[in-house]
Length: 584
Image (cartoon, rainbow, N blue to C red):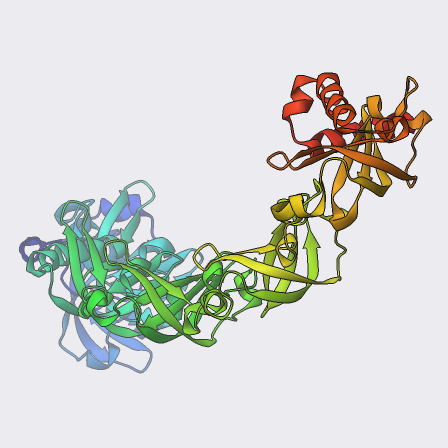
């Protein structure tokens, strides 16, 4: 209620009565008269003529004086002889031949009439907290009892009701029941109205951007409510700190006094948004100047995720060390394998994104890239030794140093043979010598060559073999169209099925088997295609230049176009697979 309404509200006059009468017929009381007509059930005036320890004698003008117990007086100590009071005349003469009178009943009738005439539902009346009862408190309204429900005592829960007893307050009349002569009042509604008026005035005086002191009233997962002394404001968790916090309780506790900044005011909804971090400058404003790319910083690990670790460089500024930036040589799958929460780390600034408030950090950049060191230490052509650590279908990985591997591709394992799988040449754990072909520090790749440790026999094949030379070798592979013979310098020659014997050969395996030692004549050398053609038949027939030429033409004619143009190693590998399946 506003101050103006409070001034206009009628106020109940005080009397000497504290308690309402206990045995009163309201119908009779309300029909009584107020003149000294000495009729029962009326209110008459009287004068106190004697004050005793147990009560007072009152002269109402009849032939005898009436007696009122001291318990019916509100302030018995202040009662004096000669005081004028109104009493209720119950009967003209009782058993003691005295008028039976009551101060309580007279006060009740007068107060009830005044309340029902001068006050109505919604009016404000003054009263005293009398005593606790079930569900609330009885209120003394100058002789008339009213009921104050527990929910209407205060805005919030009251911890100790005893502290309120005998205290006077203003109350709002919620309901008057004339038949039952009950009155229900509320103190809470007046407090809420007062607070609403005060809150509206408080909001008008408040300005966005100003600092206000308050007390932490309540803490939730999303923020804290701050009592500003007239209105509550919300301090959201995102406005508490420039840094990372997961729960407001990390910074605040209930009852704590803090100073906050007003960020926004919603007058319609009477809501105030508050900020704590806004009291200090945003550390991201000059982050690019303070932390240039390439500089080294120190910080503490504040959060670890599978993909990386967040490091607090300063309060409100965090950077991320991605797992890919934690080691030059090891494959890190979990950041927790490298760093732990709370650990102090030193890292290098890789990238700063001021707009998105992101900083990329590198842990491995504190040391020089070992791939660059290796590139300087082992230029292309350098020889290295290492153990085979792993194999794939396309190559073998060889450890060079510092957990860095180089790869020997199957195409770089032999000058003379088609290698389908590295296990045809190498074994895991085997120490090999290889040649550095290329080092790419950016891609972290090292290409090694096994065949490059030897001279390519095809580079000077003319000095090793000539057409017409008689050679010896061992059958290494058998195909449907011929057999491959391992010659010196690890070079394979092909004896086509047409050159195995002067007699017709139906199947190669009918004449030649793996491991057989044979002797043949060189009938063809193709340096570009890296092929050597051999003939056992020509050797048996006694060969000459013409017969050798004829044998070479016969082989070329017998080969399919695709075989004639294709790689002999591929033909040999595929045919061998087919042959092995048939044999199985």
